[in-house]
Length: 506
Ligand SMILES: [Zn+2]
Image (cartoon, rainbow, N blue to C red; front, side, top):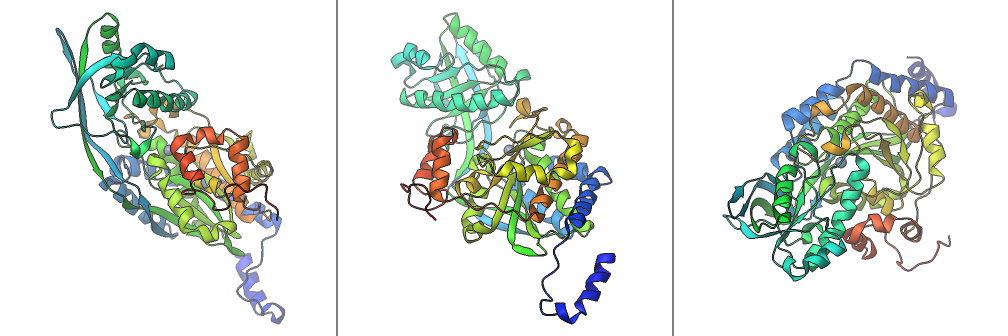
C-alpha cells in the first residue's frame, strides 16, 4: 500500500516525469523484506501437493510424444493462467518419436519355459510380430574380459548382463557410465541385443536410455531382476537357453513438441532474464512424481505466490517447464536455439531435477565466481541450510545447453531420499515425495530465483573458447558421452565460434 501511494506521488513530480515508464529500483532493505515475504509463503496454504497429485494421478506418466504429454502442456498452461501468471507454449523439434506399446519375453530351454517381465529401453528397435528369438548368453558384467570370453558366440545372440542392485544416486551414475561401455562392446561384437538384469529390488521395471540414442539398431531391454537371475543361474549350470522378445513400439520421424514458459516481467531490468527450470515430461512406467513432477509444481507455485504477493522482481523471471528432457534435453536445447539472440542477457539458468530430497546446495558448473552469488541469494533461507556449492559442470539435465552456450548455470543438488531406486521406474508415484520437504525446497528455489533477479552482479556469458576450455579441463567431455560430444564438436549444439580458437582476447 505504501509503495503504491509513493509511486502515485512521485509520478506527479516534474523532476521524475521525464522517465515515467522506468520504475524505481528497490532498496536492499525492501528487497530483503520482499524475499522474506516470498519464502514464508510456502509454509502456508498453497496447492503445492494437490497440484502434484493432479499432475501425476490425473495426467499420469507423460513421455514426450504421447497424448498424456500434450495434456500435461495444457495442464501447466492452465495452472499458470489460473494464477494470473503470463505463460505460453513454445514449440521445438523432437528428433524422433519413441513410445513403447508393449514388451514381453519368454525364456526357453529343455524343460524350461517362463515369461519374465521386461521393459524396452528407450530407442530400442521393435521386433517382428511373434517376437525375435535368439540364444541367450551369460555376458557376466559385460566387461572387456567377459566379451573376450564370449568371443564369436556373442554374434547374433541376446546378451544377459549382470547388474548390482541399485541403492542410491551414485549407483545410478555408475549404471549409466557402465552401460555406455557395455553397449559399445555388445554392438562391436554383433549381438542381437542386450538384456540388462533389472538393478532394482522387488522386480521393479524402469527405463534406461540406450546410450547411442536414436542411432541404435537393436532390441534392447531391462528384465525384471528375479527372472534375469533365474536365467543367469540356469546358464551358469550349463543349460542352453533362448530368449524370445516381442517389443511393439510407436515410432516416427521428427515432430514438434512444446515447452511451457511462465513469465513474470522484470520491473527495472526487464530485458535481463533469470531462468528457473524443471522438466515437465517423464517416463511412462510410473507417473513421474520425483522425476520431475515435484519440481514442476514447485516452480508453478513459486510463480503463483510471487503474483499473489504482488512481487515484481528487477529482472524478468522465466519459469521454464521443459519437454523432451528424458530423450536428450531437447526442450531446453530448442529454447537456447530459439532465444540465442537473448542469451547474452540471460543472467542465470537453473535446473531442478533430483526429486523431493532436501536441496543442500547447487552445482555451479565450473565457474568459481558463481558460488558466492548463490550464497548471497540463499541468505533469506539460510536457516534451511547449510548449503554447499559444488563447482563442477553437470551433464544430464536441462542446464546442459545453457552451459554449452556459456550461460551461468545451476543444478539443485538434492539429497537422494527415494530418488535412486525409483528413478524412471514403475514406482515413481506420489507417495515417494515428502510434502514438507517439497515446501522447503520451493522456498529455497524462491530465494534463489528472487536473489538472482534482484542482485546487481551479472556474470558475463562465456565464449566458445571458454566453454571449450571447460570441456577440456574438467570431466565434462567424459560426461557428455559420444553423441553429445559429437553434437558439441560439430556445432550442432552449443555456442558458435571458431572451434580451434585459443583463449578469448577481448
Ligand atoms: Zn529428470
